Structure formats: structure tokens, C-alpha cells
Image 1 (cartoon, rainbow, N blue to C red):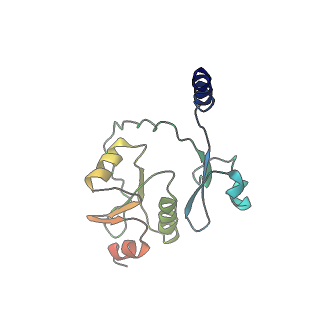
Image 2: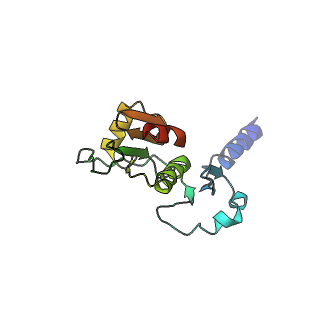
Image 3: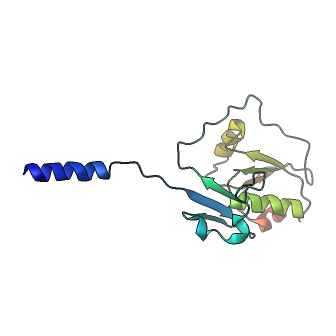
Length: 161
């Protein structure tokens, strides 16, 4: 019995350490977001971007630690005079969202002026996002029309094009 208790204590100590791991996130050329647990699963053409930082952020290592604190915005959500057809086009997004990047690319390619808000960095934008019933990103607001998700046809329709 004493031997069994010592053995059980040893086994518990052996497995009591904290588990750690890395998750790699990358956005492919079509804007699809991928998560993998092994760098070898990241295609070579995306792997070489690992050391780069910038607005594209095509590949990154995601730390599963505590959620980042949100910056409190002192300024109200500003409506810049960027508009399209009389309506302000607003894009509510996050830095890590592949479909947000895809929507941003779409707006740029079509020459549509817009205002972009990162709902994780701007608490006022996050509040506006929640008030619109936001649950996922991207969300595009054109005047009073709210478009959820990556939906280029709805954006064009909302602009009357």
C-alpha cells in the first residue's frame, strides 16, 4: 500500500507541469484564416513571412494567454468626411480576422472610401459594434444599412451599384 501511494505521488508530480504550445495563424492568398499547431503545417510561401510585422500580418504566433486589455477611447467615434454616394462606409474589424482583411482589400480594389475601426483597440467602436448587434467581424455599415460578414454583393447593393 505504501509503495502504491509513493508511485501515485510520483505519477502526479510527473504530469503536474503546465502544458505549453504554440498556435500559428496565417491568412492565405484568398483571405482564408488558418490555425495550425506545427510550423511544418504552414505552407512555405507563408512561412517566410514569420519574422515580418506590419499591417498585413499574414502569419503570426498566437499566444493563448490572457485576453489583452482594451484601450479606453477618450474620443467619441469620429465620422470623417469620407463617404460614398452620400453615405459613410464604416468597416468594423479586428487585426487578426482574415475576412476583415479580405473585405478591406475588396473596398480598396473597388475604390470605395471607408472608415476602418478596430473593435479590439477602440472601446467606442466596440460599443457601437455591440449596439449594432455585432457578434462576428467584419461588419460594414453604410448609412443605416448593416452588413455582417464578408458579403461584397451586399456592400455593392448597399451603395446602389
